[in-house]
Image (cartoon, rainbow, N blue to C red; front, top):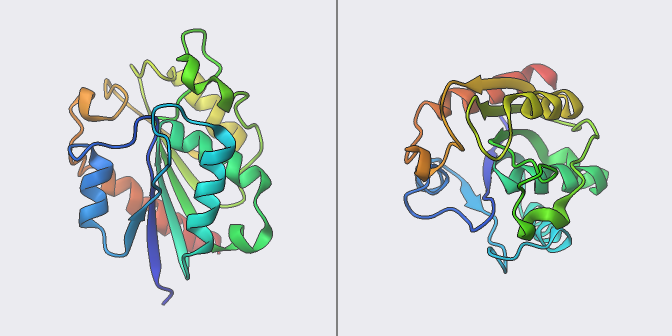
Length: 187
């Protein structure tokens, strides 16, 4: 059985200690997290390069667990990554991806535009919400279709972060385990 590692990919402003990603980082075995140099003024190329660096320094199978702008960084990374790096990825859980093309997108995130339209070369599940200000359910469905992701839309879950009451988000583990089961079937 292959040794699975989890790589947490936070979004804009990082994930606070109360965020479910931080809880998962502390809870999951073999978990690490991408630490960006600038969480407040994200630069797409820097974020993609840091994600690449983390993946290069890991061995074995990797499951990416991304939130918000971290999801967008993952898709930009996958669109230009080399075959050796891509081969390490078993799957990606993409939670509440931020639509960087939306009219009210914060200026700090706009350099991540346009959204990647390329299909991801690994298994993925996109978890969105009926009332996420960062991406409508319609846009989340468009992203899932473009990326080849299985789509899950949760009712009234907001941005699936601390502000929407998701501190541990233990029900999210069900989607992580589903992702891993799907990834095994796709191998």
